[in-house]
Image (cartoon, rainbow, N blue to C red):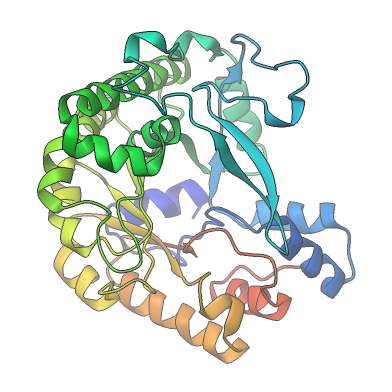
Length: 357
């Protein structure tokens, strides 16, 4: 089977020649360096190999919007939402943590009308067809595009603590903010999908609604405030003929019925280290309604388990989550710096994608 055939067959709950595979959020830089040293090859070669083994390929339009570079603040250039980030070193890799929330005073000193929201017209979609052709140059792959996050984009602008306060004190205002963000993503994907004429298979959406021990907000609040915007977006995407991969970290079992009802096709990440995230229960109760992507732990097994632990977990994921199709095996998030190279190689080998230097 081609990679595209393999992915699409799995999403139809059909048998495949081997388990569909994705690198998900990939391997962080320090872990790639460790892997290159272990294999005795260059970083470039490691990156080429990791790219080659995935059944998914990603495309994105070109940004042509206004420049937001501020003199004297080149290291903290804002994104299209006006959010600034600062590089922070965690002992292995550099992450970019938010340093400025442009809507921090929302409802008090700032209104939604005071803020310049991005336009879908700030992107050039004319390159997408050619980029899809390039992505398929070595075969036929499932083509994905992202990344529609509504709640997270909103709290990046407002601040997380402020967001949870405003959800209670100013729910109408936050609903309007979610609506503005959702409408932007709808316009963005409408333009992209019109430009490619069926060349994209999967649209990546998401919002982290779970933490280690449960949902970030009450289920009724999620149902009322956030779910309707994703449902509207999903309806538009389904009408355009694409599958929807929805990402959330954390313990999301309480929201599973709502996620299915919301119209997702694939639940991404599946962080089984979080409380109550039972792979057998998840597959049994919802495996005939949605598919799954991820599940190999970057939180415990890959960084701290033995090679045997890694192999055992991969086998269990394939046997449970992959039963009767509906599963793309992948890490549960980005593989972190400090993860033993031997464990990464064991994961790839057991998933049927060994690296060949």
